[in-house]
Image (cartoon, rainbow over all chains, first blue to last red; front, side, top):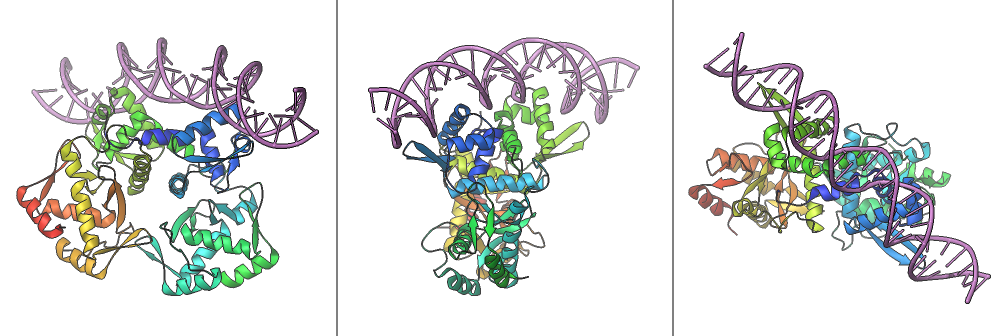
Length: 225
Length: 225
DNA sequence: TTCATGCTTCGATCATAACCGAAGCATCCA
DNA sequence: TGGATGCTTCGGTTATGATCGAAGCATGAA
């Protein structure tokens, strides 16, 4: 009928509740098996299989074989960004599947959002970095200042960003806090460094991030209000 | 089942072909009547009516009554940005409803994308402004330089941006050109100024923008490669 | 080889919702 | 007032696709 990209096709892919649940689960950033995703979505393995095939055909997910397991993951950070945009809008429009924000207190406190820190601690870090002038807003986008670059270099023990062309700093709406947290390359690197330092570790079966008492202390020393 | 925003609900709204066609038509930026949208989507008025009610309930569109007409439009620039993101991904993933890019040569040449200039001339302007240092990329976002601000002030006869909190400069993937053009406040202002100056005017029944010969000459003088 | 596990394909069922014809409301015009 | 237009509501049909049981295929273990 009309020209232009076929947005209906990929929107319809995301629009099925079972597939949306799977994609949301994959926002955890790690690759999951078909069985795990089936459980996540509350459907049987056969059904999940056909959904996964469709998602792959639509370019939303990719898979790796490993022995008799087959791991599924989001196809790219672009897909994650698209899902984030949808989540942000859905949260803003008041379409929540349950209460405003995750019910589990641990999820509210700290969780992973694809590859970066989200939840209360995510927003604390983000706002602290803004307050200290490590980040600034420019036209509603986020830029790392020179001071921020020094800070990042010292904390990460590496040059922030490197050669990748992905956005260095992005703002991601946290739907439990209704405020923003840091995404993009920097967001990924910051979380990675915190786990490397032993401040925090990922819960194996969920998106929850558990901080050790010492890790939490260091975190607050670094990002205190 | 899961916590978090209900992305399935709004994705499903966009995922129906008829509704997607309507939303795409509304990307033209102007408010349209139910009959016009029905024709656009190739369905009857009754069917369109129920689709429009659902879109409104989902917060994607809003409507204004005016006499016995009822005009429908996108609810916000945020919705437009969401649709743009979907279009960008769909185009990138190769999901085109027809050939790569709009079929109509005039559409390819210059058209409106919600509220800014798109098509070949949109990309020419954007790349010229980058080449002249009026805009720079920073972490894949676009920032207006001081020189660019001077240029904009002179051309627009106004301070770019004003007090609005919307992004000043955004990059929007042009799916006919497969390159970017300028969106955001600046994109809107630039197009508005060009029509004010009589360089171009909108085709009443489509998204095509027609440049006058003199307007096109001035345009190229200002944004020549 | 034989068995178990993880996953996919096949076939059939069933529910959702997209659709239109007809009728019902408004609004505007004469 | 009567009639035209724009749109919505109602009712019923139909098609899409989401789902699962059962069987089929791989892979790896015994």
